[in-house]
Amino acid sequence: MVKNSHAPARRTIGAVEKAAAILAEVCAHPQGLSLSEIAGALALDPGLAHRYLNSLTAARLLHRDLRTRLVTPGPALLAARHAAAGHYTRQSAEFVAALQQLHGGLRETLSILRWTGSGPHAVWVKDSPDTLALTYRLGAVLPLLSTASGHVCLAFAPQAEVRPLLEREWPRRRAEVGPQLNRWSLQELVAEVRKRRLARGRNYLHRVSAISTPLFDADRRFWGVLTALGPTARFPYGWRSPVARGLHAFSLEHAVPEHFVDSLQAMPAG
Image (cartoon, rainbow, N blue to C red):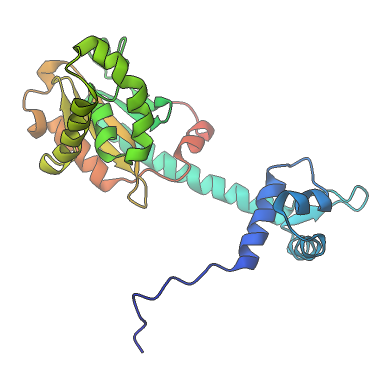
């Protein structure tokens, strides 16, 4: 029998969701929680919460102190968290190794920026062996409207996430450019940038000295921006340059691992 592909997806199992919520709540308070505190935090009936705690304690996912009655993470849960952390760290180490290989081939300054509502945050930076490349990083403001990284964010990030950044930036940009940059022209600029991503692929060139490409997670959601910075002489062919091709190939081949930023903190420096 062929299943109806248009049928609604099956709802998740409520019991699993409740158990996961209890585990997450206890992990967030490793000093220990009482039964009433867990039930109150998750809006659960105390009797139902007690049955869940008994099952999770029997599975060694939680531990309940016989004297204080406080619930803390159990040995099985701690072992699972340790294994998961190691898994994510290994994935991130492989991703960083691929970045190091790309850096060795391009010999340019590479950076990964994560754009948030407060602006861009440098997640990973590897300088070029040529110190001249550093001059292009000094004093960089990295705005949306006038940098390669910002244009990639404009093109690929959800518009709801980009809008607050634009609202904060465009008055300053208008003071620099003049009254011709009004809200209508700003909308036209954003529309042109988003249209350009289809016409020119996934690389953006800004004033010849920076090329950026978007990075995506395993679910193909926009995650951040990978940028190469270097002297103008290094990028004589624009989109056809080895740097552009290298960044483009990297973005196609590699997805940003889950918990990448957290894993970087756990990895040894170097």
